Image (cartoon, rainbow, N blue to C red):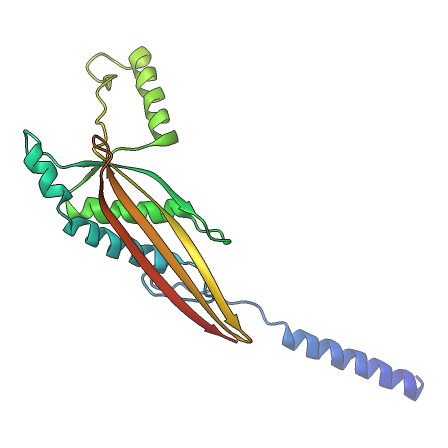
Length: 200
C-alpha cells in the first residue's frame, strides 16, 4: 500500500472513531414529579400548578361563598362550571391541564362542587339515554336530574416578551373571573403574574 493511501486510511479511521466518541447516547432518568426542571422560559407544569394553587386560594377568601350560603335555604356548597380559559400566547399551553389543577385545588378545599361542561356533559347525557334503553330498572341514572351551576369561572393566559441581545424576560399574566350565573355579577377577579429571566 502506498504511503498516501495508508495516511488516508488512517485519517478516515481516526475520523470515524472521533465521530463515534462525539455521538453519545441520551440518558433518561426518573425524577420526582414535584421537582421543577426548567429547560426553557416556556409555561410548564410547575407554572400551571402554582398559579392554580395561588389563585384558587385567593378566590376562596372572597365573600361569595358565605353570601351564597346565607342566600340558600340549605347549607349546600356552591356549584361551579369552568367555561373557557383562553390561551392568548403564541405558544402551546395545555389549558386542560391548568383547568384540572384548578379543579383539584377547589375540590380539595371542600368548599365547592363542580359540574362538567361541553363534550363531557354531552357524553354523560348520551350515556343516560343509553341506560334508559339498556340498564336494569333501579340502576338507571335518571334524566333531568343534573345539578345546575351557580357560578361560572373563565379567563385568559397572556404572555409578554422583552429581549436585549442574549437576555430575555418572559412574563405570563393569568386573569380569571367568577360570575354569578343568576345575577351576572362578577364576584371574584384574580390575577397572577410570572416572570422568567433567561440568559444565553
